[in-house]
Image (cartoon, rainbow, N blue to C red; front, side, top):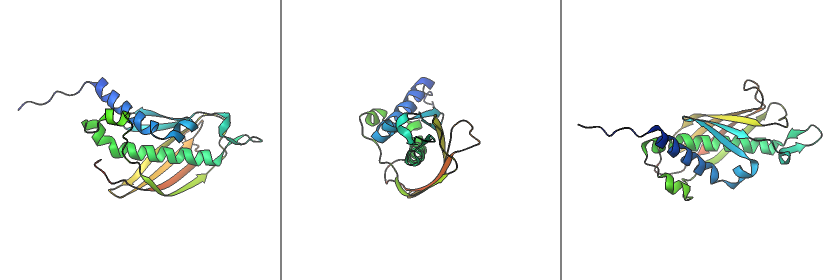
Length: 170
């Protein structure tokens, strides 16, 4: 019995990057805020590049609480979608050309979202990572933490519950 030879690493990386770009590019608000994602294997780190438009209180100055909440929710939703689609991306079942053409899989719907503001967001870049606590066919639970200079000192965290879309993904 002959085995199919493994795909070249570059092909796998291109497929992963194209899938992530399609997910992120499909939500205009993500571009408006300037959120990008750094991918290392199956782990995503969200980056919120500082911009003056993100300031809510110019006297402190501090990042607006709504921007912080949106950043956390975006991180949770994209990370959940990424983990949900991972098997299809890796196996090649997910057609990257279809994603690039704008035919995105449906994103999870937020059931509830609770933010803990731990300290003011300073006028500098912010980072966030999400941990999917549970992901089933219908429901998912995600925890997110955002930090700026020191990962051990988050400035905000959130817990979210999502209704998973019905579909063909894993």
